[in-house]
Image 1 (cartoon, rainbow over the protein chains, first blue to last red):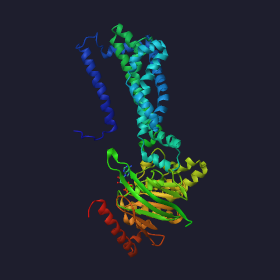
Image 2: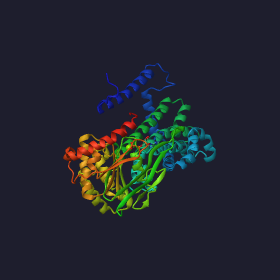
Image 3: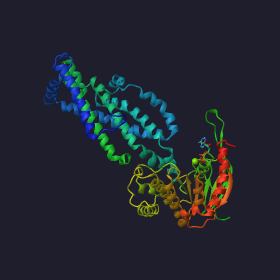
Image 4: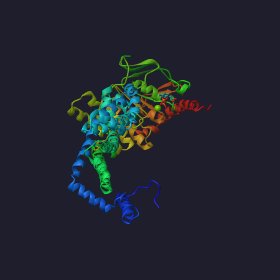
Length: 258
Length: 263
Ligand SMILES: Nc1ncnc2c1ncn2[C@@H]1O[C@H](COP(=O)(O)OP(=O)(O)O)[C@@H](O)[C@H]1O
Ligand SMILES: [Mg+2]
């Protein structure tokens, strides 16, 4: 029996991780191919792959994937570009925090998906509307989480910087920001994951392209194979972006692991 | 008294009570004059206000009353003219050892070539050659504190403030660090204010030991240490050293008993 908190080797970790995926697909295949679940509600894995192949080769699904990725990245980069500096300022300057924190905390609980109908009225059903959904869903989360991280910077490091001659601005630039850079990167990774759920909602309504649009189209045709394929593609893209983010963080912040 | 560098003038500190509690008198009005090139150790039981006094000199805390003058100018906040080494490890974890030592020089805008030269010389002085590109996490506690001393000295401060810098180190390392610091002082003659609760450490390093009383902190005794330089660790076993130690032990014991409420 493994003991609590006992580490496992890298090989065991990978094997265990893959075996759950295998188990999951086996259970799915057993339920569908074995005839326990109606095909109308749930396609079997083989049909799903065939449908997926058809989508990619005949219906230009790669284009849909591309447009969805573009929307997520676009809205997310926009949000991060505004939210990270604001969050740093809020964390660093308490009066700024007192000014913005109550509003941001309130805005954070406004569900991005509920803005979709309103945004369609404001911005039409073009790309701007999709980007705005992602933006609204991400920006307040990033601001608050970055502000908390920066606000929790070790006081003794800040004091050390002052005794070494740093100005207030120097402390922000050369202590608060580098000290929290890894955590900010981690926050961005987390929020990017959430951004994926907003984009699909934005694409379910009033859209003519994207993964979400394909899924809603397939629903009309009862093509559960296609729907599942779309969902799995989202999962795979999420996994890849997560992996890339972690790899970049490891490269950028070697001192974290040192 | 032309060579007084630091003058502590009736400095006291009262911390406001938390959640309606009574205010804490951490420091009674305190006077102290520090001469150029003095190595002063401030000795007292824990909680007697040593850190408070040092932080006020550093400018990290403000006195409730009184003032501190450095070269005749009143201290209003922290600055590069007073280097500080903390008990906790305060190297910047995202900078390498060399970059940590260079931090103050960068803030001052010292050109790169000159910066590298100064960093190399202090890396050498604290015995960290070969570790320039390591991150703090990769170093032992003793090495981190050596880097912190080098980082403070590289800035060429008027006075070096140390708040129990070796408090978290094991005994052997602590002894080596004392010799290293003393060696640097014997060569460079920086003015040093060194806080400790360790009697041997206080005597071994000091040209003057200031004994503080239990809370609220007050200066209770001011004892010159005339042991010859250069000092070697074997000095700790000489009769002169033992006499001083016995004297200070007695002073401190009373205070420690008071601090613990034993009579
Ligand atoms: N920021 C603070 N707020 C309230 N009380 C404090 C604060 N800092 C220190 N004190 C109190 O002041 C007294 C002296 O503290 P300190 O200077 O840290 O003592 P020492 O360094 O000699 O151990 C202690 O009783 C401590 O609890
Ligand atoms: Mg202390």
